[in-house]
Each structure stands twice: as C-alpha cells, then as structure tokens.
Length: 188
Image (cartoon, rainbow, N blue to C red; front, side, top):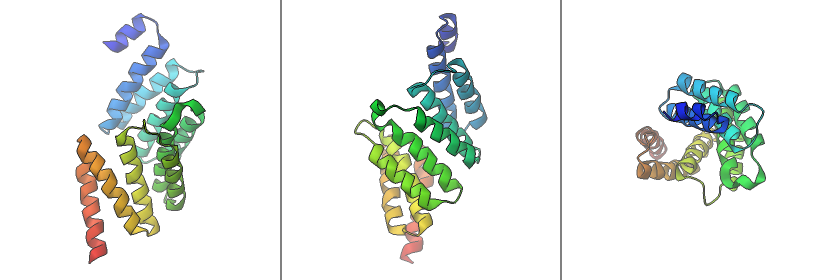
C-alpha cells in the first residue's frame, strides 16, 4: 500500500524509501534474493542521487551479498556505502565499516577485519543503534578468534550476546552456542 501511494504521488525518494524498507525487512529474515530485488529497485528509482538513502541501499546490498557468500561483492557495496556518506552523518559510517569487516572476514583476512572493526568502533556515536553495535562486536569477536585472541573474542561475543538478548534478536541463540563452545574449548 505504501509503495502504491508513493508511486501514485510520483515521489521517487518515497518510493526508494519504501523499497529500501521492504528490502531491509527481507534481509533481516535471510531472504537474500527477495531483499536484493527490493534494494536494486530502490537504487534504480533514485539513480544519480547521492546521500544517506543511497548509502543505506548499498549497505543493504552488502548484507545481501554477504548472505549469499559473495564476499568481494559484499565488500564492494559496503565500500560504496561508506563513500556516499557525508561527514555530518555521525556514527552511520560504522555500518559500512562493519560490513566491510565482515566481507574481509569471509575472505579469511581477520587482521584487516579487526582493523576495520576498530575503525567502526571509533566512528560509532551515542546515537548508534545497539543492534548495530552488537553486530560489530560479533564481527570483531569472530576475527579476534581468527587471529588467536580468544580472550578478547569472548569479551566481544558476551557484549554482543547481551545486546541481542535484550533486544530479542534472532541471532542470540546461535551466538550463545558459539560462545559456549569457545569458552568450553579454552577452559578444557
């Protein structure tokens, strides 16, 4: 209904926002092909424009390609997202930096992923969403584990898990299991 209204009003930004939200919702439920369709349609509607909305679309596409296992494309879209942000957007840069870190992690480059996570932590602002911080801490923990820094990885995962559990995020059970296995492996 919202999309139909936006089209009737011939408002391309409103259309792109609705498509973007549909894509984001699909992405949150791991429906990657569906999310890709919505996000690419949103990008087509506002082609030639720059700014936060296009950056968010590219950020979403990074998540799509990460979910599909295409780490190079995920990194590319995250990098485009970062490049579209302006200095006045505050902590928004932490999102594409986290996505870039996740893509580097998928490629097995944990050292670069840790560096990108640290940049994202510096970019965070007090206005950043707790869930985004939790995703960042989960990514940082995974790459710290990959570099052998298990103690810090456990700390990052505990912080992420607390936020996921408080927010009722569907990622909490899986992270709880990974954390328990890592703690068990290090204490035995």
